[in-house]
Image (cartoon, rainbow, N blue to C red; front, top):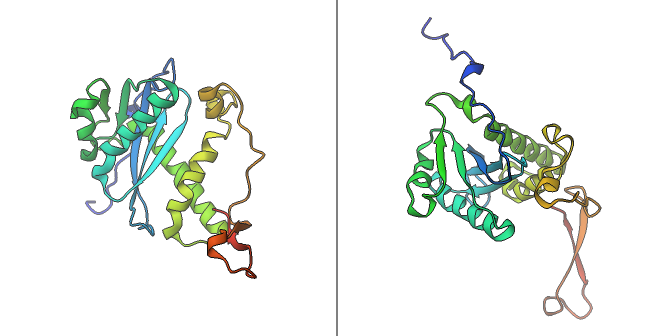
Length: 216
């Protein structure tokens, strides 16, 4: 019996949706472990706005970088939208404790899920799963090794922001944030052939003017 017992999934422990009334009123966050990347990164921290469902993600080498990444997001939100994050929801991970106690984040309400109840952080966990699955898909399609995931993280987040969401009545997070639909005309398939100009100071007089590469 001791070798077969498992934790039964219990939907009752899920934190109810807050139904935020404006963008950046509530941010959900979670950290997921990834394969070691070329630059040494091992983790991804994600932040998802409850109202717009917009998501932002940062690669990290260490979990204790969570405070730094939160402050980076907070500064960007204030600079781009003139807004302030009011509430921050995450799991019970110790790496998040500095965010709740740091002097510069004292104006942010900090809430954590109950111990061993990951389901209460459902939105953040779904964001992580979506990002991880899309990175895996792009890596496979472009025939790239797992260590290249950091090269595609920004791309996946960029596309997610421009993808319709059923909870937004088929609108995109981009529309909720910026008040207009996004343009997709510039998008190209990851892994496509591309040509980059070789700067004049780096090429011979009779040498090639461009070099073949692959779009990431």
